[in-house]
Length: 266
Ligand SMILES: [Zn+2]
Image (tube, rainbow, N blue to C red; front, side, top):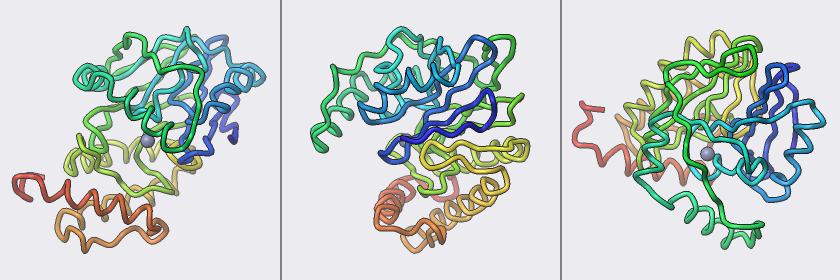
């Protein structure tokens, strides 16, 4: 697990698994943790990392409710969990899904946890909207397309944008079962001006990148998704993201892009 300070009020912790990111944000004595690392030892260490850096965690936010972003509970069992209404709705509509997928992952990789994942009742946040922290406010922006739910968190005083599973330097756009290409493209349009304001962008997977690099990835991702819609399997993957693992995601995307009623509606 790697911890990098982007600003005196923002520290990003990156998991050894999938490079899943977890962002600590503070204003004065109050800090939030956004998303989570994946492995039990990382979650066990996280409260000490936060404390040493002077982040008094009082709440958890999640960019979306894929299980690998939902594990902060193991590190901060008393922290309420804030999320977009779209995320709360997804948890309601897929009861037990996150727990089941976590169990499958743990079984496959021989990972042992201190106990099953419990999730508190979600605190619904206004998205688009704001969320108070200490004396300041975070900006919340809707992000859908990777999944049916989600939000990006902009930290205006630090110029840091935490996007969840978009703009990753290590992963191509992933249209998961509840996602859609058209919603993904609309999210990229919405993120573009925010990325323009950001000094640092924190993707859900991979290292934090500067705004310029994030903008380049945004354009690559847009080009890839348009090609996916037009040419399906023949769409070219972004140059730096063509590993076997990314080709597998691409194959999954092809089935999702073609299962839509008509290309004109994407
Ligand atoms: Zn993810």
